[in-house]
Amino acid sequence: MIMRPGQQLLLPANPLFIWGSLLIALLINFAINMGVVGRAAWAPDVLAITLVFWTVHQPLRVSIGAAFVFGLCMDVHQASWLGQHALAYTVLSFFAITIHRRLLWFPMPSQAVQVLPLFAAAHAIEVVLRMMGIGVFPGWSLLLAPVLEAVLWPVISVLLLAPQRRAPDPDANRPL
Image 1: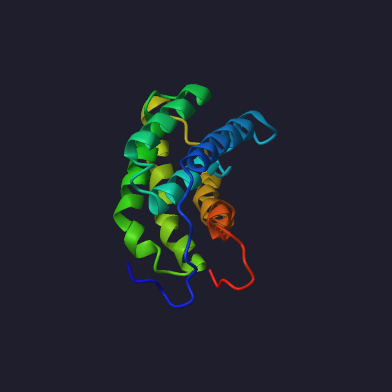
Image 2: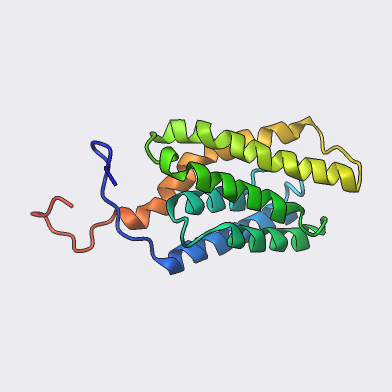
């Protein structure tokens, strides 16, 4: 693959780090839903951001099946319809896989703008399923969640790419 000028060569991602970060994101989602925020419609979905990140950067390791399993975990935790989050995360991962090659060519702010429709589509799927099930609209503050997730995209990207940016054997005379 041809790299952009000035782009840093990354080390391979450690599978333990990938799955550990996904489990930590799941626990953060659990904490957000049980904490002070509760099940607020505007709260960002950290697990969705992490799933999209790893689906874009490591599509062979984190795929649609992993998104489905994590979605079922969120469904069980939130006592929502079984498959509501699973469907949303599966669609989110599918669209992330379709744009992953193109997305990596853009700088971080442009990436955040391009993943915004993905997050909006995932929340739209959840709202439609919720409306079909219990018929209660969560409120217009729901529109803030995809925006917050797009704003968090650069932060999550920097945090999750940090272990890959370090040199394998640091040396003052080696440029990589």
